[in-house]
Length: 352
Image (cartoon, rainbow, N blue to C red):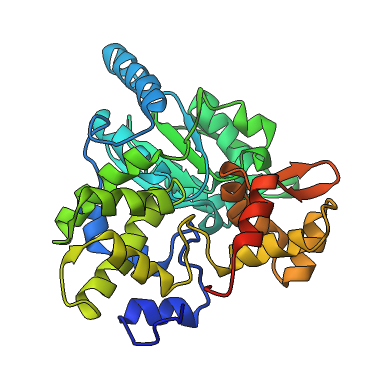
């Protein structure tokens, strides 16, 4: 099927110019600037769709902390990008009737940056650090005493004039979010009272998220259309909402309507070379590369070199979904296509 070459909107153009994958669950500038996303965020844990086991654990911990009039224990949230770690941090703060201060680990470059953040906190507040596995060692060590004893141990001066100064901190809750749990050092990981994994969402849960958001953007989807889009969204709410916006653009500009059917969704996503499994051209290129290796396990670095891409990106962005749908398996010797993955890629023709 030919790719639609008409300019759907500025967001579409910027996406193609920067060579960003529409199905990449990492946040893109449009996700940050879209005001409707803020209105779509739930206000309470009860309104949050999905993650029932995690919500149950958080509910008990929050109620217990409220009963004792104590801050919530430090909490570590981990999972793939786009599953709602930031949203959950806000919800925890709302449930505790306090503020949530946000920081990203790459922005905390020097020890004084984390010192400033900690000193600005008030009693009971939440400090949310995204991608916490990227904290540098000095910053991380300052967090040890802050998390454990609510104090900062600072060294002032140098050489013979150096002296230790202790600053007491208000009792606060640190919520760390990471996509790479194994990259967090054991001393830091052990200081979190709770560690919760955020799982991929089911199609039914994503369908509910899509329906709720479609109302906010005045889009009319029937049940079949919303479920079809949910199945393609890789179990990730961020992707579901991003794909929904692209479908809206196509429906309004090409079809001149706000009513979206299954056929409109298929035509819109075909224009981005996304198929019925939610896989794009790069996913199929990855699978084809493995298929051409005649059932031999292939190392990640070899795949990255063959595809001309970064091995870390392949491991964290491309492979998790392929493993989830049963197309790929990781072995000690390398990556292998499953029988299901082999059948899928061999059935593909020149439509994409």
